[in-house]
Image (cartoon, rainbow, N blue to C red; front, side):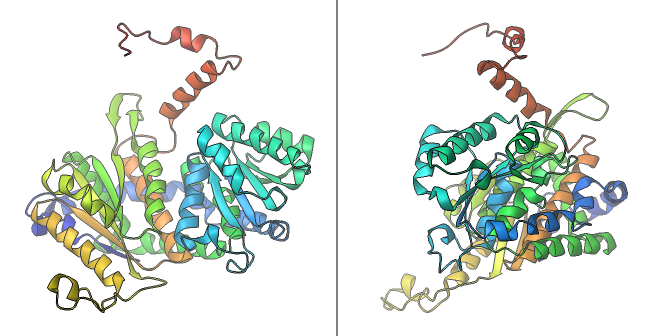
Length: 452
């Protein structure tokens, strides 16, 4: 992968963060980076072992019996699966024939409880050839467990044995799913207890579905491992993680608190969804490490080039200059097309004729970067020489490490999500779960109702 910070610098866009600003901040970034590396957080420990790869590979022969895997999860239990699926398989993968897929699985992610979505979903399945992967560390996630109960009934109504069509990805020792697995002899995979959902894509959470559709999970790890080795050794101004941290933090302190990730590749688009959760849940916090109210955070936004050149770029160019935009680029596409030669007498069309469509896409990206720079809007570009497991593994680790160091600099805990947990408690109360009866009584009543 290649990383360009050229158009995030004041020297090139006439305002913003300068090289001198980065030099003055270098020591603090180095200290925070070294602190994270020295403390060896769980997402780093994870890639130092083959334990979880081997655990998933043990199920290889079993999952070959299926043509479809359905992931029942939400948040990190879903977004990582979607990011791997869309980036590393063709976009039409799930509608290919078995022969075209070389008998590898289709992968679907059921990550909502919208009844229209859930009902329509089951119409696409052949129950005899479908495996459901229920992903929840605690086994109490309301959305995931509701979908599990629906899937269980679907299996039973199809006159199939439940344990033949379910696998639980959960805590290694405790939790509801672990208890059910023992009672009903259901296969299990491990979510490392110290790994939060948004950091879990390289655990069995993401690895099982990836393996089932033919993604090389060892290469994913190889990309992450080589990235770690590289980032630990490189000097500051040669180190893309440190430069990314410095620019994101300094622009944040300069009131650029919106982080846009704009992918010029449909296949990379859902990596931006994965990034949004990682960035938003990790860095959006009410309290700092001293329990003081700080209300910090960067708002992540996703966009797709060239589609959003015609919806969002007007705002980015001429609206409030409160964003740092990160572009995702692909240099070499798996497949390309040449634009046919027609209407050569029309200049607006003749300039397109006989050109690769990838040239048009990346020309639009370059044009967008330059237009933003003229308006003083900073941007960073991450380029994939090609989309493969190693590069996606590097991308994942790049942002996990960036996020952890950003959390250190912001003096907050990047690994918890108390704001999410509060919403869950209210949901349990509305659904009548025992032990949560008082939470609604204790909540603040509106002083004025305005319902039309």
